[in-house]
Length: 347
Image 1 (spheres, helix red, strand yellow):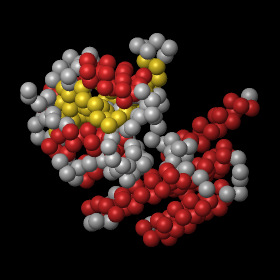
Image 2 (cartoon, one colour):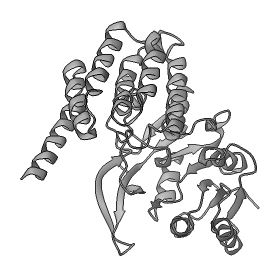
Image 3 (cartoon, one colour):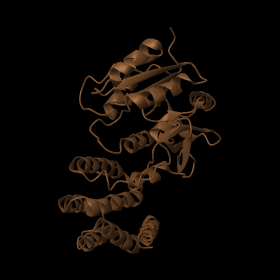
Image 4 (cartoon, one colour):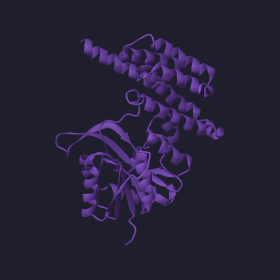
């Protein structure tokens, strides 16, 4: 029995309904030479048993269960990658969808571009109607070549592509793995790891959209879900890791400028919906890595915002101050959205 051309790795936790949908997408592929590795994260529903039933019905499907700590999709992806045998590897999420032509166009692109380590394809977010087959198109896309330097974009907390939009040469990932200690922004971290490792890539600019991200994704939506004590610890771990790499040499240190934007954005989230203890720690912890003027501006914003208790007011005030003090257009747009929301409520 020959090794399959493509290994597909999907982590799963308590996701029976959506797992069936993504597996159905894979089984409908026009390209047939694939293996699917589902790695269950010790589900507490019946999704592990359901996955085993899928494997019985199709010999191309293998089901594994996480047998070590830590818990999480990153560990499951590493287990799947270790067991993959295909020439190429694709990481998918269990709650998303792919087009019937996804594998075919990705494999053909790689076969026509033998000098690259991974290809980048287009993805679109969607929100399903009551009729599952009909998809709402959203205004969020990935995989379109809009930037010349993805590292710069990722460090600004912008996502030119996702891991799921890519197809990798498996051998190119030798020595690269998902950081199992990281509980936040795992996609961003893996993308930076591959870029810093020197992997060569190419955007498939003439490709069709072949990946559909369920729901509404926003790389800017960190204030609601990234300020809990556990997630705060993860963000500090991630920022420490990034700064450690940026301080390696002069070539990497140039990225401290775009990274400042991410630091400001997350600090803004902390002063709006986090705790004063965390925002104070954050400022003091990163004080050695940024200029005194940078830290003073951040501290000024915090002290003013702390005068208010309503989150909407705090968001408006902080956005206005960050726009004035740092000039980031994102906060100008946010102010406009907040102002329109206020008008819609009062009218």
